[in-house]
Image 1 (cartoon, rainbow, N blue to C red):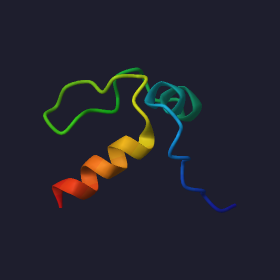
Image 2: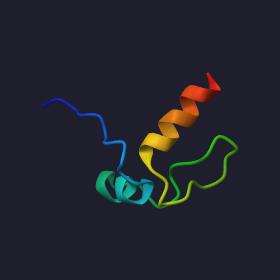
Image 3: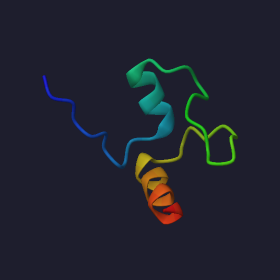
Length: 51
């Protein structure tokens, strides 16, 4: 079975629940907990900007 890319409009909280990650598992670049209503697409844009 092929893994699919997570939708960009999915929120961090929903993604953590869906994948079984504990709350707070996804962190910002500075090490702080990412807000649960932040979208996956925003995180991707931020990581592209850092490169």
